[in-house]
Image (cartoon, rainbow, N blue to C red):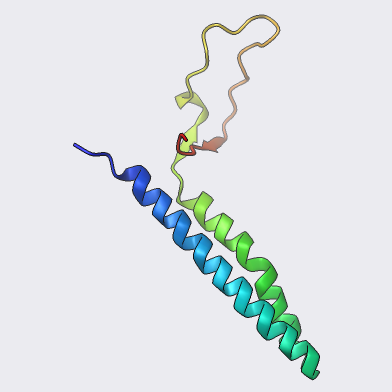
Length: 99
């Protein structure tokens, strides 16, 4: 049986990145053209969208990752006194796929 869960997650990250790149490119071109022709409000809005598009893509990719609670983490048993076991908090971490 083939595990396709990592392939699906990778594809969603790829799609989010491509959408962000297209939105950034179109927003940058339209914003610069609007700025050069004197349409300042349109230039401001499109350049703002162009700047924020990659951040929304990063948020979408991180939001699609499964959450891992602290009590689910397996810490190494061979930690020394210089590296004590981390304190368990009530928060969660994002599990990224192994590379």
